[in-house]
Image (tube, rainbow, N blue to C red; front, side, top):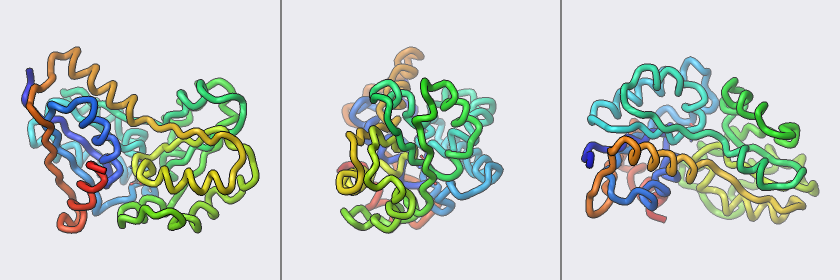
Length: 257
Ligand code: DGL
């Protein structure tokens, strides 16, 4: 039994979608969440900037004496995970776009992989993609603008149509077999996107994300290292570099919705 907290990091509110799964699978842990909301979105920044911000955020979480670090951000994982693992002596769990389950589960049609601009350009992601069977089926779509709107608390049907048209408009009337949500923020607009996809695309449009797989990996690591906690209930402490008075209620709404 290990009562030290689990540190969870994202550039902003997106990691709440991963933490939500963690609360379900590992409900006896104490979580400390840090959102670097002041600097979000990371996805439009240079690799050097993302690396520096991720290392600084990791240091902040380390100051709480965490037993494991959960990088709940595809963008930060792709850029900084190697350096973070080299620097930290605790286990670091990370997330990456769920293209593997998508390739294994759907036929031979188009898979749209939606992520931040930075993720779609990263060497780490392209190496992962190269290992997929028929990787030419995967079409990478950088989606600038999504994260900013999600950080503002906008989640209504139709409220993203302008951005969807801009980034996905060329697939209208086309068959789309799967959509991979390659950014943890995008989970919060899954229903909004599904409604758009139903109106505009042909094909099954099955959704995939890496959240559950990542949390299962966290559970495996904690168990194998004998680090599980045994609290009666999960506890979550929220920290942000942004405006806490506005962000904390939004974070809690997303986490417990
Ligand atoms: N939530 C993050 C991810 O999974 C990135 C959002 C951002 O651009 O800051 O990639």
